[in-house]
Image (cartoon, rainbow, N blue to C red; front, side):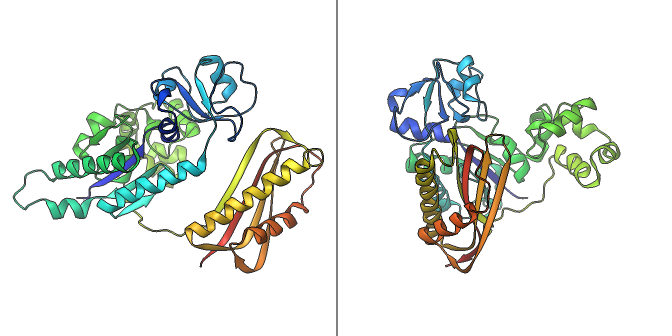
Length: 367
């Protein structure tokens, strides 16, 4: 038996901002759309632009807005909701804090992004549960509660945790009682607590697959579990069809990967308005240099140097181009990254307005 936890920070970016602006607590608020600078807090009313919501508080979600939604649409749904610009440097700092707090109690963690991790609690449960104990899941519940307390003490933020026998179920369970939820599910609980949920709740079933399942009359995880696996394989292919059958029954053998080398590190930004390579050259150059400096800081903090530097441009028509430059020696120096990225820039057409600019470091080597 394994005891796997999934820890998900609650409305992470918005919650970090509420530490900065505690007087806004309880009000609908969204993060996104602008860089820092200018008025820090405004309402969505009258918003004009193409920004999207990075995250929203639960009060804002109750009004129908959610992450990934365009801010203009959100302004129509919730014109009085507050809009704050994103501060990713601060979010990364709090990410490091909460992960360090968890690691001090349960060191076997798998980093899944800025606001979520998997934790293997199996060893801790075994170490703290005497042989005569009837239910080690109670021990797992207590450990998860300790993790929630440690995260709150270290950051002032809340998190939700799901504990189950595997990663797939824990990912679902952590979302069942947000915010500040703690859910423990045994495999025997799957028919009661998991099967009534929409099939989309399974991590790995996206909008297209969900639509195809609905065409087959399959809307819930339970209906997917009862479907003929041969039919799923015929419709979705051998690998994905077989996985759908296993996932619906709550079966997942993936281990918690406590370490993996990143393949690349990148920084990019989408502009509030399209920028022209000539008329907005000074602004573009300043943003370009800033991205390279931040990328160098990321490399230094994570202990890597890069052999390849890449450029990413997205034009006003959404066409995206990338260029790479392989260096003679790995580097983490901001000036060297800027020079290499500048050479890449010379190899792309600049006859259209630009909506996104990014730089990437790959071919990573430990310093």
